Length: 257
Image (cartoon, rainbow, N blue to C red):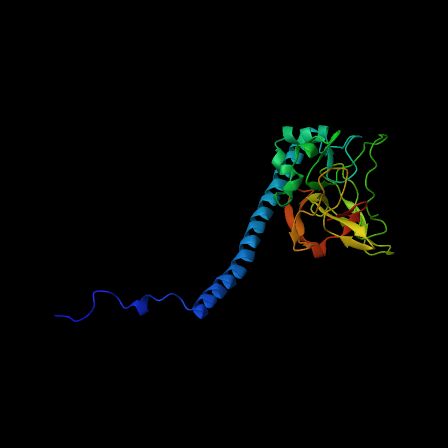
């Protein structure tokens, strides 16, 4: 007959020691420090993919409009606002009629913009993307368009676009007398909103105050700095542009793309 006790040794059931507990907590903290940024990065990559899909959908809507109006882009009316994400109700509705949806007009990394007060903002819609269509028709009056860098003097210069098939002569360097040609595959038609305010001579990429009760900020952030943004080009393709490759091209507040 066995002399072993039917009860397990109480010492075998002893709880973790303090050292073992601290080691376990440290391991969990280490795993969280690795996993949380990874999950955040994965979510941002998903948002970027959705953002690119939004712009692809808007590009198709613009192409549909152009097919009906002799390759013209929707031209912004006199009441379209002055920031580059402001679009008139008329042109917003044209995009919807041509297949766009409200959600496409807002980047998923900047959904704070998708508010009814922005959709109906006193005569125009505050969207989530910069638009580079011509702002006011020839001879028209209304909101003054943001001045863009002059392509005849600055290699980062641009112009407001009128047709699906356009090109632009841009100086090769400041002060140069030679030019290069930007075609539909080079000219931006819409872009993620990357916005800054100048404070004490420095660009501040936190929240920027405008006419809305809701402060504005750059859509895709990497900590305290912009990460970049998706760009829709005149030929219809969409690609990502890192912030280091963006330039400040319109002002008051500062518009980057």
